[in-house]
Image 1 (cartoon, rainbow, N blue to C red):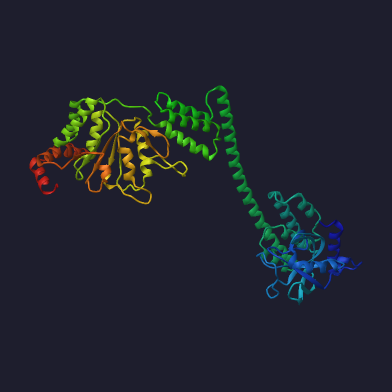
Image 2 (image 1 turned 135 degrees about the vertical axis):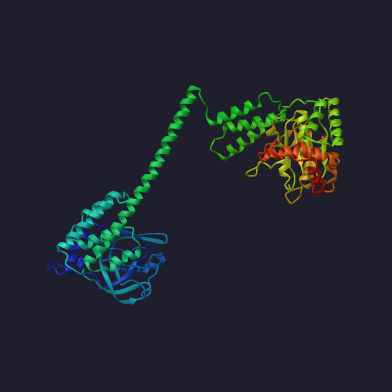
Length: 565
């Protein structure tokens, strides 16, 4: 930072150049030949005092030559908004700023010099067009009288605009206000240059200010820049106010919520999230018969949850795992209704005909009644589409009084759909069977595996092979889901599978199932189905009263014979 005497010398030198008489001040006699340095992004103004960074390998020779000169004066020339390190004499501006080097400091490959802007120079001739750049210059005077009332009015307007700008934008420090106090309307040229230098205008606009020698014209341009700067600062202030208001509101809500949590915790009204989660998981396990190995693993995860921070990613993974593990129906079974007459009544209620199929299902239930439990067998219903395979599975669940869950295997290509993903993967989930048990909340539901003949295979694995462990009564006692990594007993689950054909079902899988074929319906059975089931359903679906529309048996027979397969 230059002292007061340096700035006084600059101003006095300017007066001398305007024709004033008096002593010759050292700064008023500036050299006619200057070494040049490029300044990118923004031109340097006579009113500025600030440091500049340079690359030593490019400008070491220039700095040494300037340092050998007694007055340490050189020129700075704007070289474009890009971070250029060279000057193109053919496209470079002709107006630059003569500066005095006050301090130089070298560190590794860079040098920092503190320079003070002295006066505009105009290039008359390029002596050296390559580094070190040397030019012959003159120092043009400001065009126009500086003591006119119009100039003074513009100067006062510039000072007022700068003060308003400093009040709006806090980025301008007290140091800039002190600079402002050092200028007066009697020094209009330096005042205008200082005003332009503190704006955030782009380099080309600022160079236009440098090139403008008429004082009034330069003042007009600077006032426009200051007006634009004020508009930007006001907009920035509004944005900051909105952001701060939003942040303050969110902070206030956050602190109030945290205070409320502390108060509730002190009064025993509520607990923090981690404690609430742990207690909820422990409450879920009450009354359930969890195997010892599974209980140990769950307890380990609960202990981990108690020490983890709620904001950590591992907390979310552990909590999600415990949510699944504790929601499973460990040892929770629904009581079977092994009443054969009731079972036959339910089958007759939902299905017309199919007496052989009903007899076979009744025999299956009779064996279960004799044993005291229905388990160990897998029913496979085979038949063309539309014969009621899925609805028979639902009727079996209703006859037994068990929960029913159905999912389709058609097009399944990933064995993880059956056995789950390992917890190491992002977004890991348990398999369909674990999801089914969580939904039905009992360990002995009726699970229907629809379209088992349409299971696919890909590089992800073979779902049909994964089903072997599920459907084999000797293996599914200790079914292992990859996500849970705990054994679960599926032996009490009654699996009902459906298929349109047997050709595409793997032999080992087909051997584990008891096949029941549904060939179709006789014409009389179709007539009863249409009259007792389909027609009432259609009337209800279309909102028509059965008294307003009727259909006779002949019409139904015509549809059955001519259109139904």
